[in-house]
Image (cartoon, rainbow, N blue to C red; front, side, top):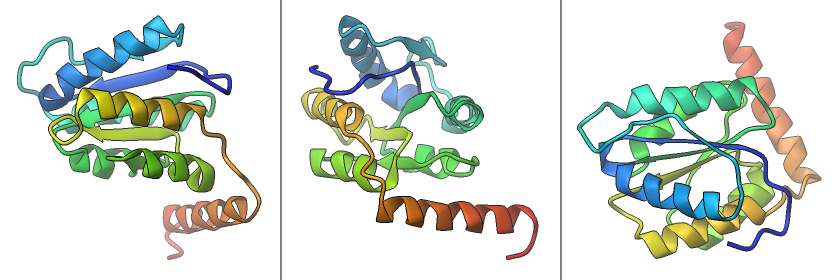
Length: 159
């Protein structure tokens, strides 16, 4: 994968349905010299996706310098889990165009993939695009500030 921007450490996790794709993506990222921290699981035995999505989402929520990748069967379960965390903008991508726009417009910090939906070749292209696409800022920053405001109001019980 060819990177146009500097990539920091990536935290990654899956459930059993995403395990094979997670391992494949890890090897590709390692080959490119991108630091990876794998939050599990360590094999394809059946596990619950909330346990692993939570680990990545918590890390990204706590450290703005991290980006995460999570993978389950369809990506839907992981999407629900990670987007419960403050400051996490998890985006489910099944195509390159969505991967590009979720970074440009939404400053996505967690990429979500469906291990039973996206093949390895397409997954590599999605990950590559997601990692190399910068946030555009501008009007998109204003929209993210509105989302942050909504989150703060919800936290305070004002909405």
